[in-house]
Length: 277
Image (cartoon, rainbow, N blue to C red; front, side):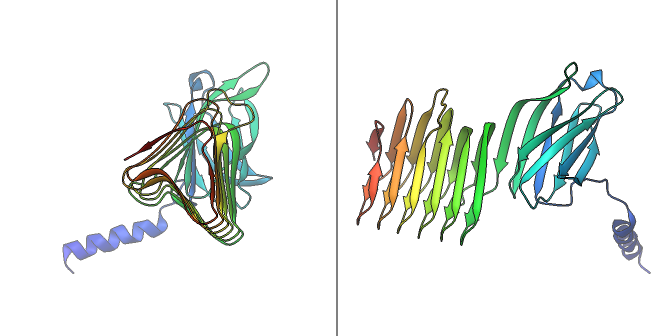
């Protein structure tokens, strides 16, 4: 038999027999990763992702303090447990979303025993939902990021609902930014900055859809930037409603026009600065 064929068969066989670590990089479309900032104080640290009493994944913190666990979640809410010879604590109520990466900077505190999240970043793949689906992330620590690499960023139709109520929102490198149609609703609220940037319409609302972009109930320094390179910053048609509600600075710009309204649609831009062309 030819040597290359033998080698190929050997490698293929290994792929079926080599074990993978619990929580390794192959199972599930959610990746939760991060760094334990003060890892050197605790020796070997085990990290476990739990959903109720079910273990979804487990790994060991690296010698550099890093960890990563890939998994699926049926509820979208998990707990994170850290264990070592001198530490054992659990952080509940961590919201995770399909097709996303959650990155956490963690400090483990003794006396009292606490898991402190210093920074919480979410890197989301493009979203497209329909029917009665609901996607919701309500977390004041989370920085939400979606870079579509030239594709469409967020699309919702039917009676679906998308809600992000977080620390900051960055939706960039989009063909279309945020599009809602039929009776769908998209609500984007942040304590701090919101950026929606696209090549075509940054916000497109059709039919009876609702799009709301604005400050949370406890804003820190909420600013809003909505920009389209070649189309409309906001394009609303049918009986759709678009509400922009900034705390502080707000700008809406479009290569053709900042805001385009047709049919019975309604657009409220509050005190935003509008720029055409």
